Each structure stands twice: as structure tokens, then as C-alpha cells.
Length: 200
Image (cartoon, rainbow, N blue to C red; front, side, top):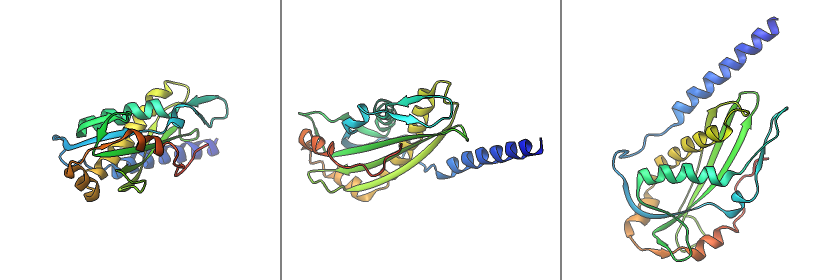
């Protein structure tokens, strides 16, 4: 009985620490009420729409496609923060291509979804202007509406990315140059880049 009580206290302490860390890591958005100027094409590699990841759980067998929910969360937040956000298309133009690499992981012991974006901004070159990695967590049971919790975790992570982009001088300088590029070929090239990190 005493071991169960100790385990319960450890779990409560871990959850409290996770929530506190979440609030500390969140960075305020610069000019949250006003949108930043710039034409940005957002791209998530095709593989995130083709190959699901399995959430680790001792009793449930749940697979999640990372691309769709990561895209929904990212586009909603980016459109609230920048004046012109679009998906990559063959004939479209943009000042910058923002490549988002999403990852999602479930911690069955803490009942927490951990989301991560690795964001890299590109112009004509394959060398990124900037690279940002941010993570966020969302408490929730895997067996109850996992899509809801996954999307919330992604939303928290992309807001941290936006907070960094809003203060990234190289990124902002490229947007301010207002030199649109054709993004179709570049986005196809970015599909072939290796991932920074893979979760299983």
C-alpha cells in the first residue's frame, strides 16, 4: 500500500513539473496582436503523410499520421501571426519556404503527448537561413480522442516556433527584402532531405 502511495505522489509531482516547465518554456510572441509582414510557403515532407508512427502503450495499438494534424495546427497559428501564409504549390511564389518537420511521441506512464517541430527556412539555396527546434506537451489519455490532444500539443509547439521566428533577424531580413521566388522546385528538393530526428 505504501509503495502505491509513493508511486502516486511521484506521478503527481512529475505531472506538476511537466506543466510548470511548459509554462516556463513558452515564449511570448512579439506583436501578438499585429501580424508580421511576409510571404511564406509552408511545407511538410510527403513522408509525414504516408508513414504513420506507433504510439507506445502496453495495451493499446494506436498509429498516428503526423502530417495532417501537424499541418492543421501549424497553418492555423502561422496565419494568425503572418500576413501571407500558403502551402507549397508548383506555380506559387514566396519570399521564404518554411520546412516543418513534425514529430509526436506518447509517454504512457505520464499520460502525455510530446510534440516537436523542427523548422528550417529556405530561399533559393539548400542551406537554411535559420533552424529552430521546439517541443511541447499535452496531458491526455491515449484511448480518449488522441487526435484532439495531438493537435493541441502541435499547436503549443508551433507557437514557440513562431515566437523564435518573430525575433530571428536573418529570417525577418529575408522577408523584408520582398524578393519572391518560385517555390515548386525547392519544395520538391526539400522532400528528399534527411530528417533531423526520428521517433519510433
